[in-house]
Image 1 (tube, one colour):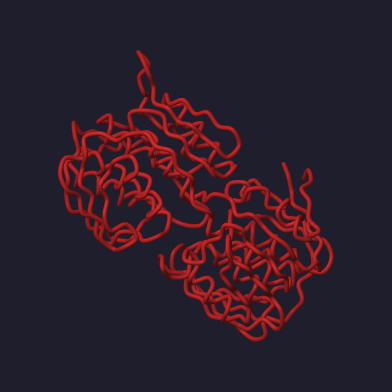
Image 2 (cartoon, one colour):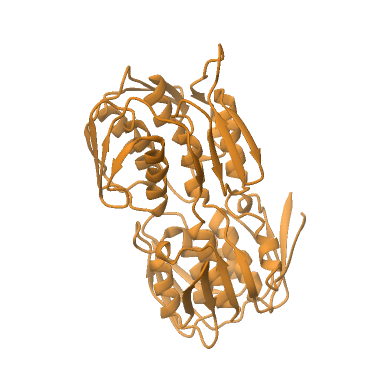
Length: 420
């Protein structure tokens, strides 16, 4: 098992290329189950979750040929039939595996997928996925930890989601594109990754309008065709490196980053006293003087993203004064706080609220990563802590950040990967 070793104190200066978005790539790879031929996707991030999804697609019977950041995915041919089942052994390692449910039912009329089970950061049920599929006319059965969904052909319906769930919305979009008639999804998720999936499906021949708004309309079609598509840059990776530049009083150009995907994050960075500017080909972040305290409430897009909460908490540790952070998306997303406490952070948790008193200097320590974004926050803390920080259990990190230690080292960080 690997660990990341960081020695703090270096200012970050230079360029960091932003990889393709994990949270866009996973549903897009599942969308390759829908067309009649082979689709090619470029700018695919080289991540553990992407490799897991490719393994699942192969298990279902699809051919997945990948060379670094380009994947070509082709359906079974000849007498080879799809298997239509996502087993527990894979789904338990990556919740996004449930995204095969919608496209398989839409195209083949049946799917059997393991229920995802628990998640470290909080409850993440798939009840909205199943509610929507039932509204589209599917029969849903729960059996021995699996959900079985059947429908000769899905039919359009109005689906009102209880909450704007991203994966639920994506699953229902992929189900509805081949349904008979019109589907309306109300209270739809509005994240840029939703818009990206709609772009991909429309290129395949789907008829989706309103992606990125609270109401989406989908006119079902009889067939989808293969495409070639380059995946959008990862806004959370860009946000993470933006915080790293701010903390180290650095000057970093985030190549490929799209400021329009990061408006809430940029607003809080500026409130902290950080300079953020769009440039040709990316976004420049400059840190300089004192960091101002800032209050944050995580919300669904276009609000402040929960996936940036842990990183901003570390930035708040360096601020002058007290910051208040409220985590309103997941109920158990403060597991990095005790680890930051080991490094000298002054943070008090009261339910969903974290009170961060800036000022105390962080010191290096051995810390344990508990989830993906917590891993990144501990590395950020190590960039400014005195002495050496060792971040253990970085397999979480490899699920969502492509070669983070190499990218940081290229702009001046003293960081390396080592065996634990």
